[in-house]
Amino acid sequence: MKTDAVSLLKADHKKVKALFTQFESAEGRREKKKIVAEALLELKLHAAIEEEIFYAAVRRTVGKELMNEADEEHHVAKVLIAELENMDGRESHYDAKFTVLAENVRHHIKEEESEMLPKAQTMKLNFEKLGAQMAERKQQLLDSGFPPVGEETMVAASGGEGDSPARIADQTGAARG
Image 1 (tube, rainbow, N blue to C red):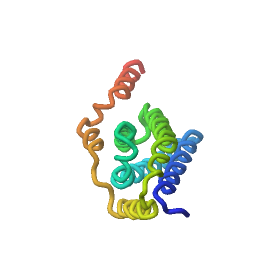
Image 2 (cartoon, rainbow, N blue to C red):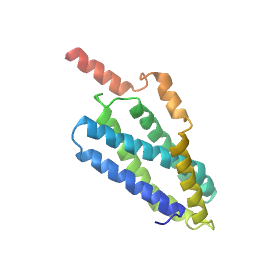
Image 3 (tube, one colour):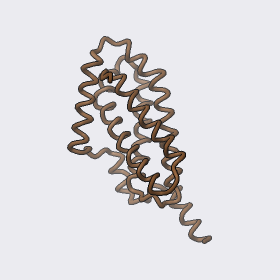
Image 4 (cartoon, rainbow, N blue to C red):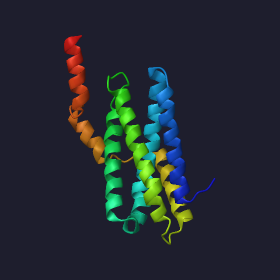
């Protein structure tokens, strides 16, 4: 298996897209929860190594506009991930929230693979060394856990109150039921 940074990122992309497809055909709460848990772990690992190592290495060459958009796409994904991690899978918006996460991530992957990665590959970087650093960091995160991110803190502080569309729909449905 290739260990250069770009190949590593593309392999991660392929893995999460496969999980999104599995979710779409999954039946039953237990199977969906298992797929969601695996996808969230993969996304958290990927975002961490990408932000800490890859984005830091290519930001200047790739350009501020493209990198800022990628940062914001990561932010939105991390908010959805934090919300999903605080759900048990029985909420009315659970499937919808994961579907929106999948759509956002698919869009992010498409842009990254068609714009950012080709620009990055024009750089005189040791992509093998960068890939090795990313793989090592991924293993460290698996072994020792993830440092908290701002989105998790924000979602936790809201106590579920920040997810107003789901809360309002649940309350409206409860009032009618």
